[in-house]
Image 1 (cartoon, rainbow, N blue to C red):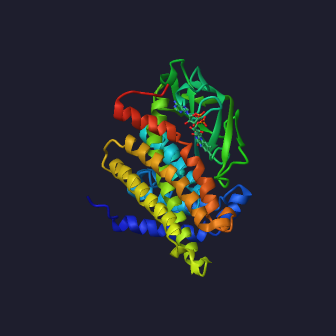
Image 2: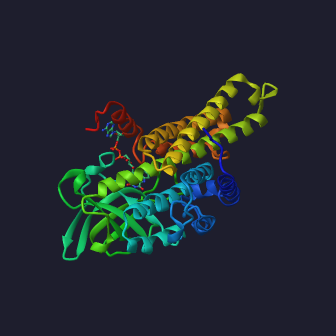
Image 3: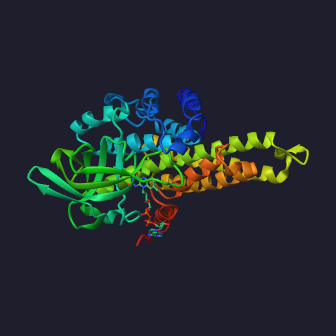
Length: 383
Ligand code: FAD
């Protein structure tokens, strides 16, 4: 088993880290307090290839492998999860859905723009009444001649107020998950409105929105995939999305490890650096173990994707473990920092606030366990 990275993969990781150390790390606390990253960083990230990694060269992307994508997500998570979310939703969830299910016209229209981040995308699945039970969503799309008219509401949509295109999942028949269809809705379509969700615990630099669709009219050419295939499109896309979340969480754990080692080496109590106390090393050892274990699960999943093998369960395991590990590691890192970890002079409090949502979105930890449990037992315990 070869777990070493290729020269290209290492080069991309180093490039990503250098860039983020310069352009994101010095500003992340301010962005967090101001509740918005500076979007001027987006085209710079696109230039480095962050947005094009999952998009082939013929559509303006970089066409990288998923191990490289995983490394990019790790570096983004280490620097600022708000940035990781912008990339993984726009090009990962929306771009990948278009790549896998779009017509040639849809690919030509959107992929070069998503790869260059001249357009951002958002993924509109969750609704006020349906989160984990997304297959029972209630937004409706009704056929009217050659158009569809969409009415409904979406909640907690990453990039919602920044996006140029929203992938909207709406009900086209009453057949439960089989009655859901996907649509690519330009956000300047009349009747589409996005309102910012404020006062989040974490990911404060990232736009999260409530979407309101009222008589939104789109041509049939905006439909992504076949009528009634929308839920399957969403679930297939989220499998790869979970890899991005897992890798972003690896970055959080890595950031917690680096911050804790640095602080424990400098902070002195009882006449010695606190790093020399066994109970402090116990905390640091747990963070280090979480980093390795989460990274190995994420890399295994990325490798399965690159080899074209089934990866859904590996993605659920990686996402479940890495997100819980990120919360645990950030808690341990705050413990290492003592009171200093409780304020924003160090990154560890922000790591904890950002990590907390990772166990919730793209399928809660409970939902990941139901997916893994179903695979192990053959019995669905969903509802
Ligand atoms: P619920 O589904 O109501 O769950 C509440 C609790 O019940 C959880 O603990 C859950 O695990 C548990 N539960 C539910 N069903 C079961 C069951 N069958 N068995 C056991 N336990 C169960 N959504 C998008 O579509 N696009 C986005 O871009 C997006 N970005 C987000 C960004 C943020 C910051 C946040 C907070 C959310 C985002 N979401 C997004 C929504 C997110 O995916 C949902 O919040 C998540 O799926 C959980 O749904 P819910 O909040 O409705 O919780």
